[in-house]
Amino acid sequence: MPTSVAGAIDFHPLRPRPEADAIEIVDQTRLPHEWLTVRIATADEAAHAIRTMQVRGAPLIGATAAYGLALALRADASDANLGAARAQLLATRPTAVNLRWALDRCVRAVESLPPSARAAAAWREADAIAAEDVTTNRAIGEHGLRLIEHLAAHTQPVQILTHCNAGALATLAFGTATAPIYLAHEAGITVHVWVSETRPRLQGAKLTTWELRARGVPHTLIVDAAGAALMRQGRVDIVLVGADRVAANGDVCNKIGTYEKALAAKDNGVPFYAAVPSTTIDWTIADGAGIPIEERAADEVLLLGGDASIAPPGTAVANPAFDVTPARLLTGIITERGVCAPGKLRTLFPE
Image 1 (cartoon, rainbow, N blue to C red):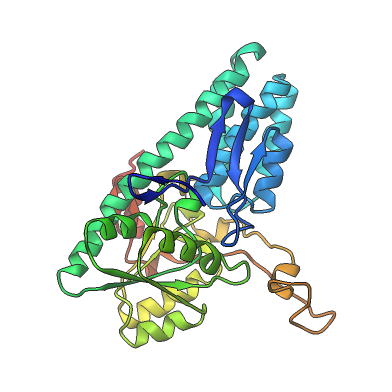
Image 2 (image 1 turned 45 degrees about the horizontal axis):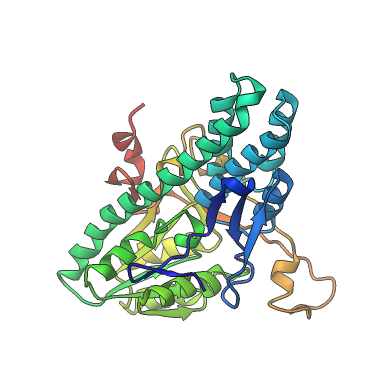
């Protein structure tokens, strides 16, 4: 288990170890049963960690890739290796835009420097990306807290539904969708979180419940399909999710199953918010139709926690990892600069 700091569980999933020319990550494929740290010392190892989802969550993927690029430059700071390492890391996960953003930021920081200065500069840039994520998520939490406070004035506990894991394990601290929940809990507001299991990789069941338990936040695990029924029964006050990419018009791409929950929320008059850092907004894509959707391996669906298939041999499988929720279904988007209607992102982030 991670150590306790000031009464709160310290589960930072990435720690730089510059003295060892490495970073340490938490292998999230081992949770909730084992807290295992893994040393990453090369770009190959960083790419493997991202691809196999030892690290996951858009902000954490970006930071890991940034450190991976710095590690590549410590081995070979030539122009050729800079380009090759960027391409290798970029190819690991196609949907989360933070990955491309972090790599391009690091490349811009070093490409005009002599090779001898590149590795140190890239490491500093990765450090900056990680530090900024902590500050950004705290700000997202404070803006989202106001929404929970408004609900708490009328009803407690505030019943919150979330999907997948947009928590501290997906970022450098606090999380995005969980940040308002943690701040509300710390402020003494009574909250209860409905955690959808998030098939097929079960990030809600394995990771979000682990986080909430560590923080002492009351929660209940549900199967993915139960969210709509709970909303119809009046047992959900607000839905908070994260995102892997947001289009310029406010369409939100998040873990598969988010769209269904947004439809149910709209039908039942339940406020639905996506909590995202500005780095998750892709201004180059007009709407969600342009967002690439990662298709993952069939075994994630067929082998549910073991070696025996849950379907007959030869069953065809489609396993899209994400879906797109149209902006019209969202009540708002929570960012580090405030909360706005999905189609009004430019009011918070003018060009």
